[in-house]
Image (cartoon, rainbow, N blue to C red; front, side, top):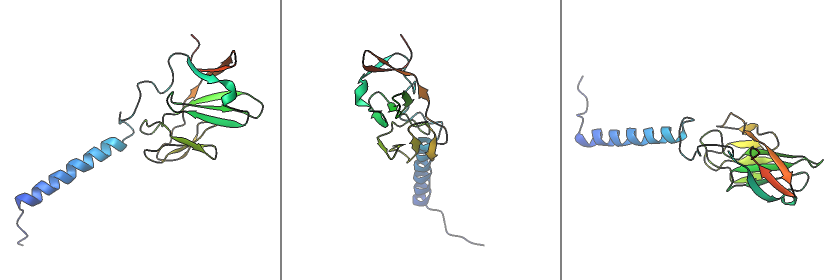
Length: 142
């Protein structure tokens, strides 16, 4: 059964598309290192500034430090990594008690870190946080 002759152009187009698809798969893979910091949580104490910046009953994203701090209604602070567990992007905003990942659309509950919308399925890691002289200090003790 005769078929169409394969041209050089057809072969090159196929190769280009296969290469592009491979790059996309690598960027979206959970094993990808794109955008990941070496450590998703602080390895040394991080001064986040005045504790009053996170009032009771609210959460705040400290994007540069890759942290989310929440203060419960009774005044207890908790912190989470703000680095998405899917591909390592840093969350870009908090809306309706959810942290949003700008890379692939994952959403996380900012009070407990649970992944509420994929592709991420692993919760955000917890980070120790404490108040010292009116300042929030995240990460391990010095």
